[in-house]
Length: 333
Image (cartoon, rainbow, N blue to C red; front, side):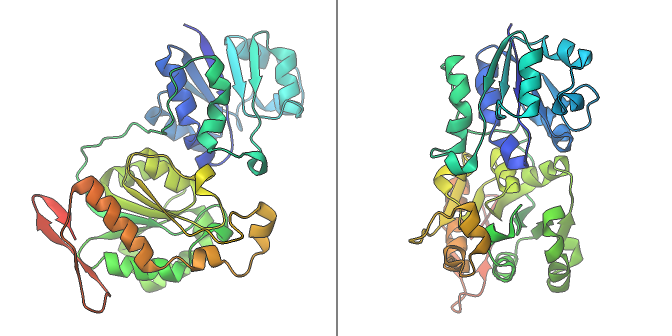
């Protein structure tokens, strides 16, 4: 069995979108070890991996980023037949890798501004020469039989410029939580929103965590998930949670989660999609501001009907609340 070392570090979305690479290699008979950030170590048991190496606190990997010839690093990487590194071949680490490794190295740097196809398809390009059994869907191995208890809203992302307004998320939460429990999920990127949420909803319905592994039980028990273009949205989608994901300045044709039950809410403007530079200075945010609460609720209805087979919809005459009722052991609109 040939052994492949996949080197991919970055945000959680970067890791989740690499899952099809891992799955494609595994289904073709390769042994696969992933090198990534220590923050994701708790997730590797939910992936189809043979091993996980922390790149940021590993005594024999860190010297390679300084260009040092570390015997332990050389001995480790030469246990593999192939290395797929999503790094630029001219950076210091990549040069160290080239000097140290005797097998086949495939460099495939990820430059967001240059990618013109879906990120999963782009990441799979190095795998095409190794196998024709390609998987294009990110999947985490979780318990699909967990009892559903609530819905989850994650109102943030790694960039505030991609976030739908928190006030609209609050309106959405209130409409959906009339007869179904809702959870607001906050991580380190949502520190600026923390006071807003504790002021407006019960603390018992707010979950704060920076541990990605701790998100898995919420993904297992959620009727559905709603979030922005974020790594957390990719995680919930990969876990199989029915997901509604709001896109604004970024292109869903490149960055959208590819789960089995994902609904993208997106209204392209004439300026869509944004470059990173334009996104960071845009004040109008028309691509996000044009998306209404009703638009997102429409996405929830659509994904609910697809997953749970519900056709029962009851809304007050004012359109303020969605009422839920029991039917055939499902909670339905």
